Image (spheres, rainbow, N blue to C red):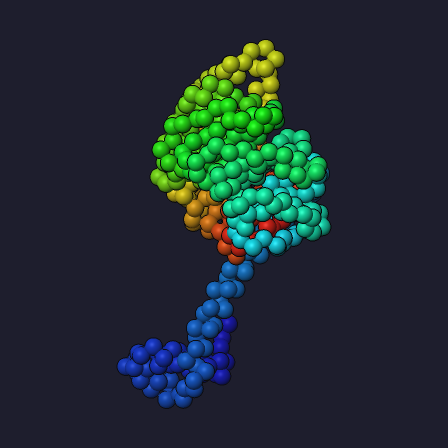
Length: 434
């Protein structure tokens, strides 16, 4: 496109204005004479910078539109081929469905109820809030902790809610009456993570006192303590079959423990910073990860993977229980760290078989998509990211600026395609998945 004389004059004036504002006096005089001694006004001093910023914003917008167009084209092609879009593969998309406000301090955890259409959020304001995720309305607040609530978890039936706090306690709440039925005391420092054993009879907790504890819900007693970490245990999870406990710590390690005996089974060291979070794979994810590793031929060979999976079926199991373990999965652990990476570990060997890089800051939480094909993560770079195990772990989706501050927690609704996220900006966001 050829510029008109008037447009050329404006361009020359904006260049002269930029030179004048930034002290390029010699260049200013030379260029001014070359352009016929044009007069420069104050508006011309910022014109070039303003235009440049506009171009950068437009380029970013074009990139976002191109990305959205590619996704829509893929969806259209799937429909055109007579394929029905698989809702189980749905991923979180912008914009958010609801923004839940009411907490007076950062959100530390979000978790969906396994049956009811509610989501629970824990906060440093010492409360747990319950929200209707369909309407986005606040329902009630559970109060009882004296300090920041660090984590919450439902049992599989949703009848009980466990919470843990910086006040050194764990509380068990009856979710039918919303009453606190038990307060478990025994940790010597901030209790950072809590989860139910699959049977629902026990709760596992992790603390800044470097210990993990197993609590019997009926009696409220601590029945076992797991010691071995050298620093604050940030998160704890129980394997799908209830045999192992996995823990992530500030000592930069991931450990697995025999839940019944209390013995340390594996110590996994490959992270270069604090390990903030972890989760076990499910049966579908085991298949995707195994296939990915076999195709890449890195980390572990196909034979090694097959042997590891065969061994996993034998660990303390036989007959019907073997079949149960095979269905539940859990052959791999996924961890997230302050070193900005996500790692996949082989549970039976403790070997890191895959590392994902992409986050620009601490990784706060990771979880497995119900389909088993994706890993979803969030972090201090304010993003929520999706990693495709069927595409060698490629980061295929990213919600930038999902919150105004660090994204601390995410949870996936297994009944309805919905993702919840909590952040340091005191809000919970609900994201529809398509």
